Image 1 (cartoon, rainbow, N blue to C red):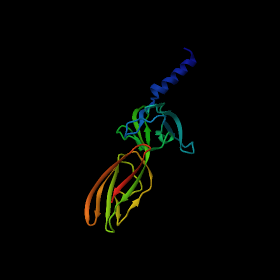
Image 2 (cartoon, rainbow, N blue to C red):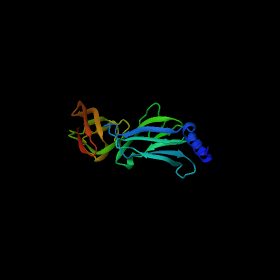
Image 3 (tube, rainbow, N blue to C red):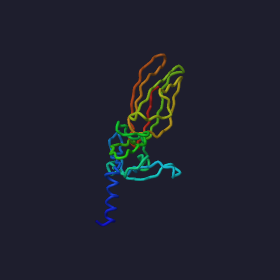
Image 4 (cartoon, rainbow, N blue to C red):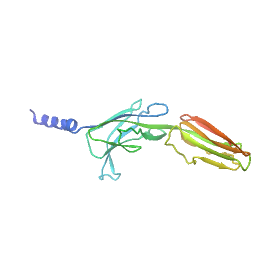
Length: 216
């Protein structure tokens, strides 16, 4: 047998059968609509002290038109996978779906295991713009207390939860960038000594601008 051919054959076998490629298959998508996000870079890094950043890119792919991807690499130690969804649009990154068989280092990083084929999906949601106004207070003894939730459990902004407003406060909020989805609140209004339960919701679409008036 040709010696060069034998060397190539042995190298090929060592990278597949004995090297046990590591593979990750999955999808990058908006979990609210179920739509895939295309052209997103999905990258395998290797932790190494030889680079100032502490890591080196060893393999990269991009998602297809429906958000699907598959990436493989001959087994290396200390490898992890990330998704760069903010490079293709204005998205709120939620991170990798937390499945029992996916070894997450954190919400945005998967530890890639030698010789394993893993399935993992990455979630991200586009933004809209939302302004919240508190209106129609009656006098200095009024109180508004509301708890707010979002379709994305991990999303928090700089508004306290619950938000409590004491006294006569008609507040015009700032127009803030906010992830699309349902925003809901429940709580109570104390006005003129009468306590009234309050509950409301509003849906924000991708790229939409909305004003949410909460009747104090």
